[in-house]
Structure formats: structure tokens, C-alpha cells
Length: 349
Length: 244
Image (cartoon, rainbow over all chains, first blue to last red; front, side, top):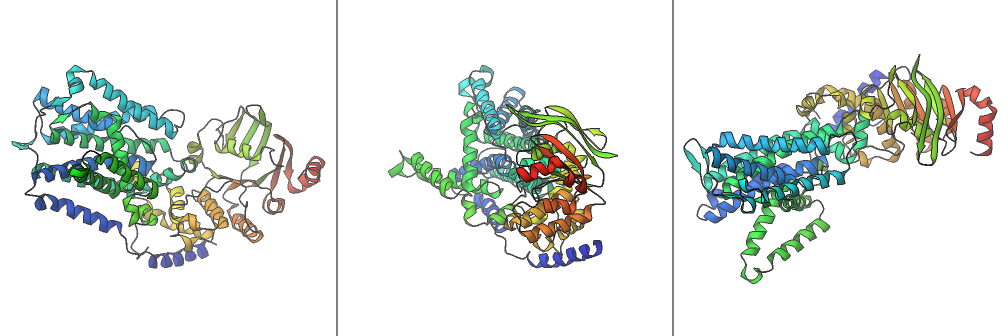
């Protein structure tokens, strides 16, 4: 049995090798997105407002990825990503104001730490209790966290209360200060590329396979011997760190942070970016952010519909979510490719 | 020595007493069948052994450990494996990845992140699939398999980590007679390495592969012994002639 079995397995492996040559769309989309984002400041060099818009898009793409890691990859419906985003934004603003420090090599890791610690605290309460939490419990728990944080800072004078903190000290590297423009865009894009690469390693690893299994059937995974909630907590904390990083960049770029940066409204925006672009992939949230922000910009700038553009945008979003549940990316990438493969693959297979 | 000892186990769901003082001993290296009419408590007992639910009273000992209130993931890590009654393969993943998931559960998060074991486990995955005639379907999505093949895949997944005890809840449900026959043939070779508890309505299938049977009726054990002993037991005959 053993020899025959091994021989049969070897023959099957040869057959499998021949099936692996199908053209894959996703790497092409990723490469096209990278080239477009790298080229953007050069193409838009004469239009500073568009470079500012693109910088916002890149920063918000980071935020959208943080949500997608939770929902699209791990099945955690987090309505609280803005809590980590906003809290980190406040912290770098306060460090600049009170300690006169804004060196990016210090403040951006600090922002990630803040996002990581807050998400760890929330994960300990929502995910790691004795009883397995329901999706609704986690969704409401994260929503409540964001809502409570927004209310807290709205009444806290030390952090500017309802007015927030303005004139945030410029992000710096040595003696160079980053104002809006190509230099700031480059830092944001570098952060996006690094986060994307790290997230890609995570979701395409064998740990990513666990997440994919968890998303389909948590109970099955528990009966294999996995502590499902621990894996969820790991991803939630990683996503919190990414949200913290994007929140700090956003505060520096806007020169302002306020209570709305912590609340459910912004958290929901991340959900929409993700659903619009295509959840369960890393490039989907980036495409969703680009599409929605560019569409908002164009619609808001069109005289004939200036009053009504949010309604038009809302209808477009609803149509996509209703009739294209896999998002824009689902139009060109098959379900099979979106799920993908996991771990190191041997050349023969 | 018994691998599994179930002592005075009772399970109450609201007004329903699904199990009532059940005692079962399962010897290592045997195939043990749980039979009985619908609603007799077979699947409930299997769920208590697997940890999907906990007993209201009584104790369950496995391989010398008290596992009565141990969570499922710890039971799995201690060598207990389960195939669900309703097929629970991961339909969006490939057949290969379904088995890999089962095999890599002992790895740490760091090892999984580094994907350090995929190549090492490759042969084991393919051998597990080949044993259940699924090696040439390794790259297909599990959802593309027929019902019978999905049942085999789930048994392959449950067996892949080399458990000490495998629980099979109606493994031939929905299978054709030919698929049932083949399932019996595929399970036979695991006997030296793995103890099996099987819940099944197909009595011919049970008689062909099991060494011992426990018969449940209305949440109670009404008979336990070899196939011959059970077939001669008048209480069992009464149930199977009058109600099944």
C-alpha cells in the first residue's frame, strides 16, 4: 500500500504540474497599480492639488488594507479601525505639540505601536474571552470602541475637544520637513509598498491558509487543533498597527486631526473602500480607495451636480455592492485566483 | 487498556434528556460502532467526545486524560479527530490545501508565517490524498468534488494528522452502494494505527468493518459487545425489528 500510494502520489504530482501554467491576472493588476502610483507625482507635477489628492488616496489605501485584513481575510467585522487610525493621529500631533518632536523614524513606529496596543486591548476583550465571540458581538464591540473614543476626545480640552488639534508640527527626517507634495507622497507610497509587501507575505503564507480556512468554517479549524481566536487576534493587531501608521500620516498630511478621525463614520468608509474594490484581496481595497476618492473629486468638481454628488456616489456604491459583490476586482479576476495559493511552492508543482 | 472511557455521561438540552447515564469503553486499536434509532443520542455522544458540546454530568477520559471540559482544539492536539455528519470540507480551497490545513495544525504561528513546513509536508499531503483516490484532484477546488469524494476528502483530512482516535459521523451518508463499499475498503488499512468510533445507519457497513458495537436507544446504552453478541441481544432485536 505504502509504495503504491507514494507512486500514485508522484504521478498525480506530474499531472498537477501541467495545470499550473494558467495566466494570472492579479500580478498584472498589482504591477499596473504600482507603476501608476510611482508615476503619479511625475505625471501630475504641474497640478499640486492632484498630488495632494493622490497622497490622501495612498494613505487611505493603507487604512482600507487594515480593514480588509480583518474582514476580507479573517472574517472579523471591525467597525473600529478608525479608533486606531485616529488615536495614532492624535498621539503624533500631541508629541509634536508637547515634545516638539516629529521625526518620522520615531513617530511613525510610535503610531504603529499605539495602533497595535489599542487593537491588542480590544482583541483581549472581544476575541480572547472564554466564550467564542459571535460576529455581531465583535462588530458592535469595535463600533462601540470607535464611538466611545470619538465622544471622549470631543469633550477633552487637552486634545482640543470638538475642534481637534490643528497646525500639527510637520513630519521631519533630520532637518528636512515634509510639506504637501511629491516628497510627502513618496513617504506615503513607500509606507504603502512596505505594508502591502508584508501583508502579502502574511496572506500568501501557510498562516494565510489558516485565515482562509477560518473565514469559511471556524469550527472545522478548531477541530483540526487551531486556536482560531488567537489567529484572529494576531491579524487584528497587525491591522491595528497599519491603521495607526495611516492615521499618523493622515494627520501630518492634513496638518489637523479631529474627533471624526476616530469615529464610526471613518470606519465605515474603510468598509466601503473595501467592498467597492473587492475584499479578500490586497489590491482590491487600493482600487476601491482610488475609485471612490477620484469619483468623489470629479463629481464634486462638476457644476451641474455639485449639490447632489454624494447621492450619485451613494447610488453607484449601492449598485456595485448589490450586483458585483466581489467588487471591481471581481470583474477581471476569477474567484479561484482571488483565493490563490499558500506557502512556498516546489517548482515541479 | 481503554483508549476512551465514558462514565455516567448525561446531556440535557432544556426539557430534552439526550443522553442519560451513558457508559462506554473503547479499546485501543478497535473499530467501534455506535448504532441506534434516530434520536437515540449517537451524534450527541460523538459531539461530547469531540468537544463540540460538554456533558451536563459525567466524565470522559481519553488516553488517560480527563477531557470532559477540554476545548476542541486541545482534544485535537492530543490525538482526537472528527469527521462531521454534514460534510465540512472547505469548498473554496483546493483539495490539496484542505489536507495541508489538517496536517499543519501542530505548527506555531511563526512557522506558519514563514511557510517553513509546506515542502516538508508535501509528501504526506499527497500520500493522504492518494490513499483516498484523490491525488489527481489535488489542484481542484474541494467544492468541485462529488458528494462521495467530499466525504472521502474529509476522512483524509481527519486521518492526515495521524490521530489516536477518529470519530466518524455517518461517513457514508448520501453515498452510492459502490462508494460505501469502497469507503469500507479505504478505512480497513488504518486499523493498526488508529482507533475508530463510527456512527452509521447502514448496518451492513457497520457489521463489515466494526469489531464492537454499542447500541443506544432514547439516550441510554441498551447493549454493548461484539457483532455476534449484539445480534443475539433480544433488546436490540426488539428495537430493530419493531422500530427501525
